Amino acid sequence: MKQIIINADDFGLHEKVNLGIIEGYKNGCITSTSLMAGGPAFQHAVDLTGGNPGLGVGVHLTLVGAQPVAPAGEIASLVNEDGNFAAGYGDFFKQFFAGRIRLKDVRLELTAQIEKIRAGGVAITHVDSHQHLHILPGIFDIVLDLCDQYSIPAMRIPDEAIFFFGGYPRKLFRTLARNGLTFLAGRARKRAKRRGLAIPDHFFGMLAGGNMQAEYLLNIVRRLPDGTAEIMIHPGLENQSLNERYGWNYHWQEELDAVRDPRLRYCVDQNHIRLLSFRELAHEQIL
Image (cartoon, rainbow, N blue to C red; front, top):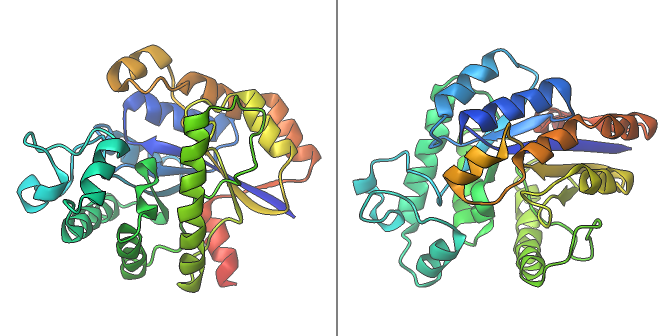
């Protein structure tokens, strides 16, 4: 049996991202999303969940590229003089591997993020993270503990197969980064399963992250292995204003178009592939 969770990251980042995710859920194949507690459009995202109860909503734990939820003075090792997180994973890694990130600060901040989402009335289906930082040693231990503490039943493990390319143009740095992440995530997978977390069997979307156009998404679905696969995407309503704001050069609109492409639905139906969220995955594991 083949099953897919199509998870849209960055819910709460921007209203145009939020609306793109909801559009991809209502009129496409999105089944799940991940909510940023510190996102500028957090409340807008929470409000949208009320009218879309079938959409699974997880926690997109965030330690870079955003503002913290916990008071900056209580998590000093995570923030700069302006009270903001590091801009991206490169700056975070420098601090982390130099031993300047205090894990107690990480625990406090991630706890605050989960608490904020719960206070918004969201039933959390799973946990993942912005730029996959939850996989880092030390941080992963904290995330496992928080899953136990808050009864979060499922987790993303971003271990895209190192020999998978899916027709995406090969770029050396991105491929090496993907393979390094896959190594760490493979070790994390074993520990997460021992803790009883529901984990999809396969993960796709790292190489094509920010550029999951219809061609690449269809390549994944047509070659889907048996079991359950998570496909990570980043949809939005319009590229220019989002990239002016964030500078990531993502193809937000094209990713939304990809999940609404009628060829995708046809491929899913013809191959008897089931679409589900982390909620159903966790429920089936319990049964």
